[in-house]
Image 1 (cartoon, rainbow, N blue to C red):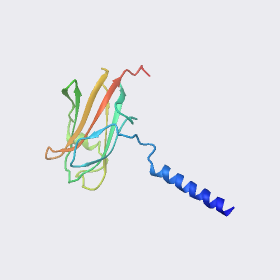
Image 2: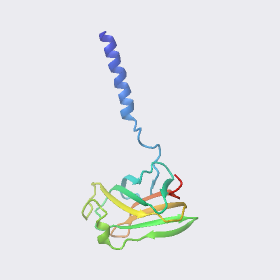
Image 3: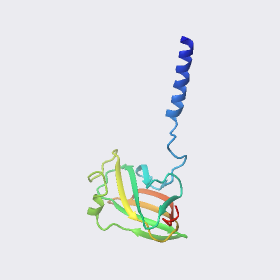
Image 4: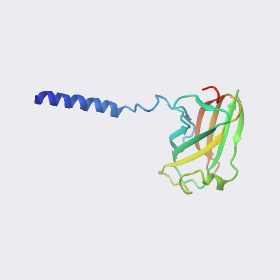
Length: 161
């Protein structure tokens, strides 16, 4: 009997290590590409998107969250969203002011190296449907590309569910 219990314990231990060791909830490949090499992007969330391309509803709000770790001290960030449509760049957003941007960060400025920060932004998707590639950049106080993520998006009709 003792041998059966030991065997069962070993099997359960191996099985749990396989489950714990494998991140079952993560997609095999993230829906975004990091396009900055100066700071670490830890996570990106766009609504409930888990695979590429992200499907977003026209005329509905979409929320983007970027968690990153600065490699250097950042005293100011300026966000920019560019949409690539048929090889043409269309700037979509430039912030109104640095003060309004501060409200979207989860920590006070200056941002210190080694700590993680999360930036959250919500935008209403355009009424027009179609495919685009979105590039979200944040420039630091020296106009360097501090944080950058790129992801394909398909804007769909909200009635097509």
